Image (cartoon, helix red, strand yellow):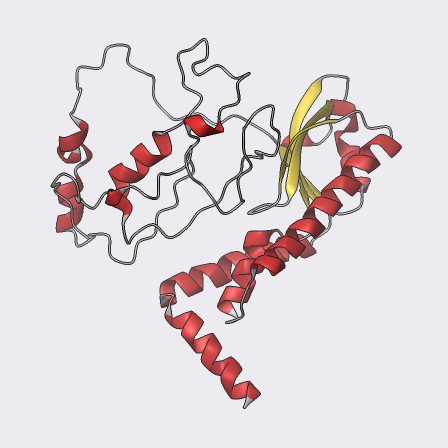
Length: 279
């Protein structure tokens, strides 16, 4: 009976995913597992470095991040609870702390800028070029690669002659042509990595499926209240402490709305103002 229940649970979970999605997930997970099982790798652009010039790198560590463990459970038809997520994050953070301690014990003067634990387990840091190869000798290191800035192709135009109205921008994006090809949004999920989302907005009724908050709001110096990791709501005036200016020197407000704007362009349902779209 237990085996039958587990099989039914697996079938129910897999029915929620298309065959194509499952195939893509299996391929990604297989690739990630293979990479994690290999020895430490130093990117070709970082080999044979010397001198005291500061180099920016990203170091991947061996503990599986949350998204990978969640994906493995998903395709196996297993549950992945909040407790499971917390346990995985604790292991990842413990490994990152151990890595940081090793930097000091091995005399590597590296400054960690960011730590990643959800979709990727690793840290970004800067250190002397001559010390980059020493990172491979540290416990848990799987890959060291350059931390580079990527830019879009083309040159910006100072005075763009085209200024389309956002409400009628479809013609500039050739959206109707995409619809005519048969792509009308069915079974499409879009992840927006931005400032957050006003998930109470009428335009997102029935389509918002959850999100993640990457910003630590535990410091009362920077925010007036904490925020759960699964709450991606926009930063509001209620989050602003007295020591923070409402607008900075560039005119940008403390509170945010850009993520909601972007999500609206992608998936607004026309509940407030009729719009031309297909789903």
